[in-house]
Image (cartoon, rainbow, N blue to C red; front, top):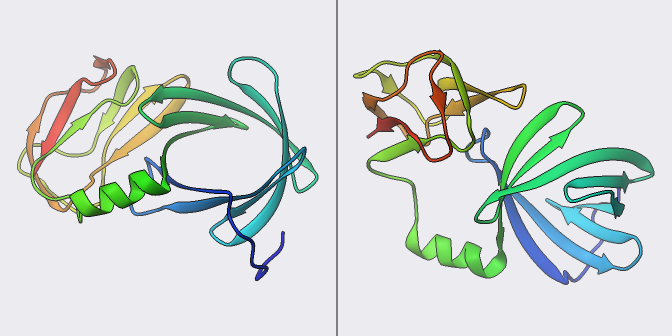
Length: 179
């Protein structure tokens, strides 16, 4: 890892992890050769990878090997599995990021919480009328042997709950409304 070395980026992306509201990673592609040089929030890494199938990547990151499964789950959204951990990541390029900043200064108003993947509801932490803060856990969705805590995107009141514990949900199913 290098720090405080100035590189001109070939491309810049912004990634957010769904279960971590308010967290954003700035990723600059600095060199695009056999080994890539990538900056994540200002920390530079050397990355080499091989594709071992449609979704399996063998990555060498700073001389350490990692087996990672990356699957597209929608519009610039990916599911990343690494050593048993499951992450949903949304990626936006610089132009898309600027466009979003102009059209969405903050998440406000009525938010419909939908299932981002098929699975089963293990636990529901809230009921209609409960007050929640941005980042508060709403429920747990079990999918692909992983438990995913779904969190509130805003401060608000739970207006409707459409799910019950043990319910099966599909991608896009309405689970709750927070406003």
